[in-house]
Image (tube, rainbow, N blue to C red; front, side, top):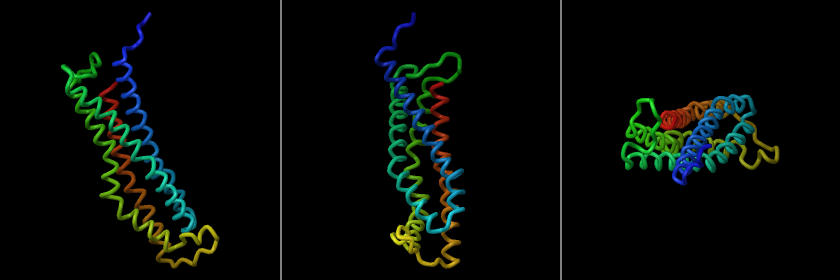
Length: 189
């Protein structure tokens, strides 16, 4: 009969599970935006496409930084705990990784997970701003009433290009989250 984990073991397991769950969930969500949502948006009429993009953007902006921050906090806590503990806090027999290597991988996982925030600000904010401005210019509240104005061909091309470009830039965020998840998995499994 096995003994139940101590409070410290339970806390470690909860932190590992939280970090891995949130970073892998976030990776999948962000990747699916580029792989599945953007191609469907590009099939839509431009005013509808821009409205849907904006709603998706608002939902992501209100949830994804939090998931990135929580998973990063858990990874950072585990990594710092590993740096302070003799021999490292996380030991898995026979895999050849030292405790210090595990701690560094966990710190890297934390940095990569929270890295979506500066990446979004530095790399994507210009495109986000252009899409928001185009959304206002093209329809804004008029889309809700079904009275959107006629679009010129240049606005159609620009909107489609910007949404497609946003999808490509978003792959960078997915890459950061996937890399963070991989670092976390290697350090904990």
